[in-house]
Length: 286
View (cartoon, rainbow, N blue to C red):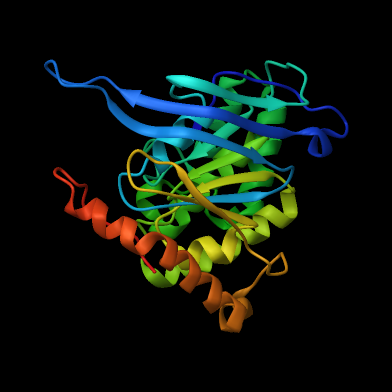
């Protein structure tokens, strides 16, 4: 989990005011040894509604993680604008907290110590740090393991610690870069349901990157489908399934229809991306 370096403070009705606004975003990386610049994202314009789970889906190498890093403040956009509107500045309130694919836990810290780390970086009082860490450890169901170390935990438990650490700093938006992709299929399915419960309990906005279509449909209010590199918005797909969701939604005909439709948008893009020179390994999981 990485705390975004710029911070703002919510007002009493911040959830109703928050709006992530992306306008004409383009991202390029400098070319090597006289080569032209590599265009990764092109003309991305997008709004995120308060309390929305917005999922980004696309073929490997399309710029999903780059878009996430720009939103999190880890990359400065080459052109365009990314802004959180409707918030007042406060150095103790991070706009975003990021959960990465890698668990990124400190092996010398306990579960509670890892969850407390971001709060320590915000220089909060010790008593407040301890209480907020305790609450988030409890929220992700790890209270019996609060004094355990990462090597004593399963992969799913480690990622729950990462999520608790991100939530502990009370960010405006939780930003997640394929956080479940390193887990086995059963654990991944269970944690998808746990993520929905966390969203329902916190009411926060989630910005979620995945290459797994079923995961996108299970989680999202809207799915942003990107083309192959340079990534452009091909379509924004509303997911018209009631939220919060549980495992029963996977058996609905509409769930299967949405999975099939998203795959139809990505299939040819993914094949073309794999045929490009230097194409990344991986792909899109249906």
